[in-house]
Amino acid sequence: MTPSPDRAETPSPAPPKHLSKGELYLLSAATAVVTANAYYIHPIIAVVADDFGVSHAMIGMVPAFNQIALALGILLLLPLGDWVSNRRLVSIFVAAQFLSVVVMALAQEYWLFVTASTVLGFFTIAPYLLPTYVSKRVAAGDLGQATAIITTGIITGILVARAGAGVLGEHFGWRSVYYVTAVLMMAVTFALPMIMEKRDSRTVAAPGQSYAGLIASIGPIVRQNKEILLSGTIQALGFGIFLSVWMGLGLHLTSPDMGYGVDTVGYLALFAIFNVFTTPRLGAWADKVGPRRARLTVATTQLFGVTLLFFFGHSLWLLMIPIVIMNVGGPLIDVCNRMTFLNKAPEIRTRLMTVYIVMMFIGGGAASWAGTTAYDLAGWQGNAALAFGMSACLWVLCFLSLRREKKDAKA
Image (cartoon, rainbow, N blue to C red; front, side, top):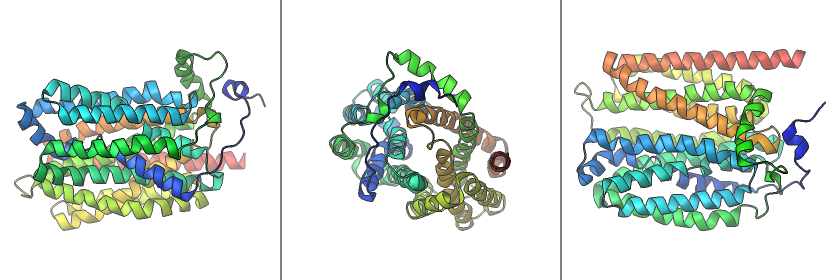
């Protein structure tokens, strides 16, 4: 069998030491801190708009530009993880995030705040670089559990951002959110280089390879690993379901028919705390049964939960049932998706992750707009119908993936 160009040009490195559970959880905590930066603005966006004297439509530039910059940063910076020491890259990216947060906290002009938020998004690469770093430093049989532990950090970061920013912003002003964030980012900036290996021998550049060549190499790698497109599409749908439903909930619960305040939407986000306990355990279960079988099982459960949105939309208490089901299932589908490509050759994993994350954000961005549009056209039932359609497509893709695996095993 002829080796791939990446594999042929890369020298055989000494295997790195395996991470301990303590190191995994420290990396998960750091992931939570760097992930949360993109979500602090959501509960305080109206207060920030009022303080800068801009319209609510104009303040939408902040999260929009942040997400666009994040996708661009992933495309241009994340592939460097297969070329440069992961430790060095993470140190640079986290330091840039820290400086961006400081500028956001101190900004007196709206344009400066938007610019700093955009730069922050561009350098928010660590949450997606750390899973590939971890995948090279755990036993193959522990990949699902290790990936789930890091994913738990992402979930925790989103949870803390949504719940914590609202409380701080309400009682101490919106700038206090970024003051606290700056302190946390400073701690992570100093801590990560001490946790991660000083010498990352598995990310040595191929002789003579340029940055342009590195980016161009993504195409051939995808052609050799076509399943990344399937896993990326499944995740795009999964992330899209999550965002479209939460967009709809924000409009539905605060509508005259339901009559709740925006704080109620934030309280519902606290249900994500279940994931802190369930995701690592379910990740270990995925190690045992295999990612594709586990993914189909979870997709079936999630489809059931999404179906309940049609019938439980009139009651806040009943809505908690499908929300919990979706909160538990969504992250595990992500874990299973990553397991399908994080077992590939170490020197191409970060570029595969690049494709996966870019597809995820494209799906999430499109579904965010589609979710609000569906609500405008048909209310909560329209939003639920959109989520059901995406969930059904996700289930079909998971089913086809498992069937293909079984056929390949028989061949």
